[in-house]
Image (cartoon, rainbow, N blue to C red; front, side, top):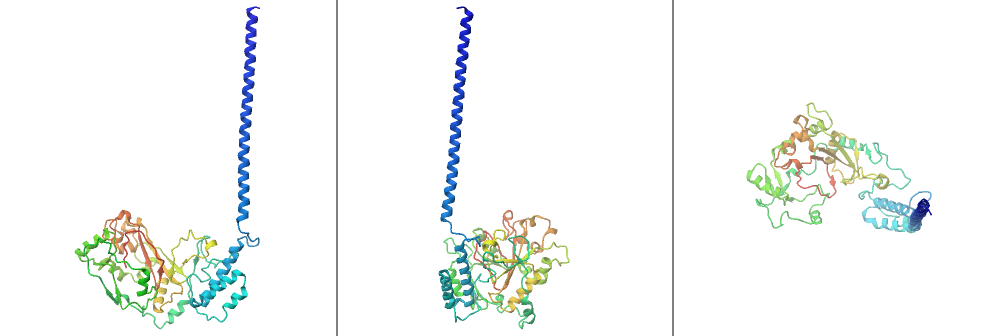
Length: 419
């Protein structure tokens, strides 16, 4: 055998081996691909089985839904019965609340006639409870809400009611003011303590229920003969007392300041006509107009809520609504409320305004009347009341009328309140 033949056989053997190796590699790739596809199919089957099982379990545990209402039938019936019981409770008054509760229970049992009979012969009264005005209750599915004129699906704007205007014009107590003048009432003040106590005894605390026993929240015309003050009172014109007040302030302990010149001057200057000229845009000077908003509640209680978060489809009309009143009209109603001793279950109105924190950083010609008249609150430099200007969050102005009550809440720390 020649050398050439040996070389040819060797090359042929190598080529044959390469073909075998190549076929083995191809088979391995095919097997790996098939195993990968099998795993993917297994995952898909597992996911589909899980979703199918979840749907079956959800369908088995979720209450049956009414085909005609498109809602939970059990919740609908309960809500309807509760609404009717609430309205009946409003009509029969507090003394017969048990009848309304009985009505609700029997209604849920299906005993409609028996529940109705339970309220027969009950003496009705006009006294009601908070949020039992039908306008305030969440509407039943399929029933219309009270219509409001305004913008947005979740923002209600009413136009208020003007029934009070005729009564205000003919009221025999017109221009006589409130029944009780608290500026001339008898007060008892604590002795001055120049060094803040460090034993936790100040301020003295009491249970709210005990406070209301002494003076009920709604007893506007029958205060105690002497109102006992427990907070320290400091004279703003006395340097020694101001020094003591600073100690209380820095410890974030509550106290009161009196005899503050700019606050007293604002109290004299801020007549209804003066304030309304800036809110309503009738002022003759070059002071920029101020912005404010009147709110209406079904009674004297104003519950805080966020209009942009209030879902009217779920919760019904919000606790209070914005109304398109000028400040002048609001002020007229506030005077009327004092003159007629407006009952707490009547519509009440509240005027709110705010000065943004950025206003104090602008030139004075851009300041509104609030910043101009209360420089200690609006100054960009430290003052007794605005002692940390970078943390100042603006000025909030609240104009209330007789009886207006806000829900118990907590504001941010270091608030300074001028009255």
